[in-house]
Image (cartoon, rainbow, N blue to C red):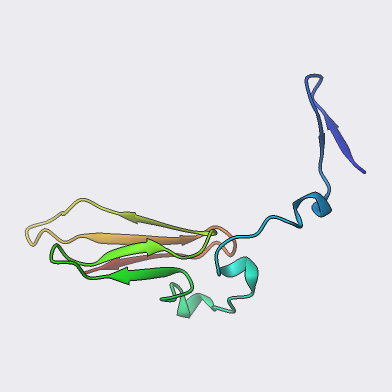
Length: 94
């Protein structure tokens, strides 16, 4: 076992210690999405369409979603999707 000693804490760094950590249905669990297919509905995010407009909710523990404030003359809202496992990033406008 490899131990990192920062003179305050001894911290094991073996992958086996992380083997029981699970979550989401995303990239780390074999989603199989290529960069051109990212983001995938149902794998990376789930979409809801209330009266106020589209709402994207994270479906994968590796994916992050940000929504910009309305900008420009047309008040366009952008959604930025990022996969922290594969490094994919995509900006989607409504």
